[in-house]
Amino acid sequence: MDEKKDNQELSPLQKARLKYSPKIPQILQNISAVSFEIGDQSLSVDSFPQISLNPQLRLISQDLETLSKPLRVGVVLSGGQAAGGHNVLTGLFDAVQELHPESRLFGFLNGPSGIPKKKYIELTKEYLAPFRNQGGFDAIGSGRTKIETPDQFEEALKTCQELDLDGLLIIGGDDSNTNAAHLAEFFLERGCKTSVIGVPKTIDGDLQNENIEISFGFDTACKIYSETIGNIARDAISAKKYYYFIKLMGRSASHVTLECALNTHPNLALIAEEIQENKETLVDVASMIADLVVARNEQGKEYGVILIPEGVIEFLSDIKALIKELNLLLATSGVHSKNLEELHSFSKKIEYIVPLLSEAAKSCFMLLPSLLQGQFLIDRDPHGNVQVSKIETERLFIHVVEEELCKRRKRGEYHGSFSGQPIFCGYEGRACLPSNFDADYCYSLGRLSAALIRHQKTGYMAAITNLNKPAALWKAIGAPLHAMMGLESRNGKLKPVIKKALVNLTSGSFQQFTKLRELWRLQDHYAQPGPIQFFGPKEIVDSIPLSLQ
Image 1 (cartoon, rainbow, N blue to C red):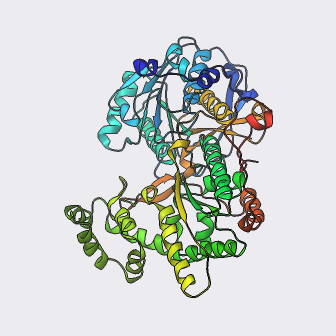
Image 2: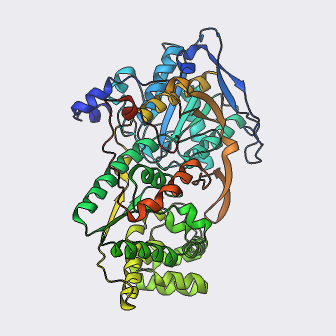
Image 3: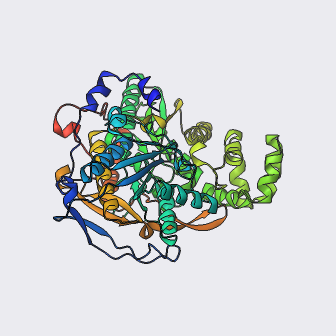
């Protein structure tokens, strides 16, 4: 690990970012003089009897005795990358050192599997120095593995006991923090002293609730994507001959698309939650986009910018029903899944699956181009579900819009030319240099996590609130993990997992979007926000997500 970082060249900007001092809330300035008071009581959950009575905790200032012995803390990065992760590590490290100068921090390597496998390194001041305010998760690596089997839980327990850990910090999204809840529950059952704390990480922005205002990485990703969208919009209005279909990250929610739309003013932005509310089908959306193309053609415009959340396909009523049937048919433990794997010819796979579908699902499936049919049948996640993120939705919409426009041309209702260009904004938003907002937010999350561990709290997520105010006025709470749970289908069975937060159609940000989108539809009000700024006017360098405003 040390050798890997030594071989990397730091750009002048990266070197300058090393010198940045994150802004933190007043309450977290003196980490040795804070405690917690009980806030709202959460409802109990049968699946988590040990942690189900955890109340909300509010961080308060309180004179305390100096910590008598050093803390030993483990940390793991779980799931996909999100800008700011390294600042959670440095915020945690600095805080435990302030609590006791002999405290030690251990980083488990390459995701949660490093815990049961006991693969870790000690994170020292010298080791962490080149990672401050930097992008990526390469300080210790990440992974999508989970601690799920009884043997894995036992090995994780053994690792934490052998390292004599006071706390284990799990930095991840909804699945990773669900895993944190199960670990906290298991450790309490077995009398293990290790506190388990989660940190809200996902660029999708769907880890939100009454205690979590936004997950870290969302702000940076949206700014990166908005720069690209703004540049592409400028190209569209310059070349005047392309319709850009831009797919954006957002597996189950449209938060990224909504934020980027507010930043860039596209001609159309699909919001999956609205499509679901209106029970729209693939044909309905194709007609809506075709209407836009025809209307702009009548104004002499053969170009436009359309934003598409990657998970929108699941919210179309007909596609949603199809996916539900396929998920039940092809659960990893099912006979149909095994039979399908044994068929090497794609045409044979289709011949096998089509007779098993209902008439409605069959009709929808046969409307899809062959490439999409394959993605529905072949690409499946570890839970046996369709991997929506791998479905090239932007190409699907270009295909169905072309077909609809062809029909209209034959009827004499459209006389223009349509050239759809697919673009996917994805991984480039995950490991970039964090915005000031994410750098500050993540450093504060690390410090808050240290306070939770110091006070032996377990089964909580570190949460910073009041984020629409200056950093000094931010507040800090411990949010009970069990209170975030809902039931979700995994391998054909309902299991408790942290609920994904969808776009609230009554929220201020969505209402602002609905007021402006008709203006953006035919007129070219494209905004070009440009790249993330780290130096300059405060209103630019310290800007926060529009959805928080």
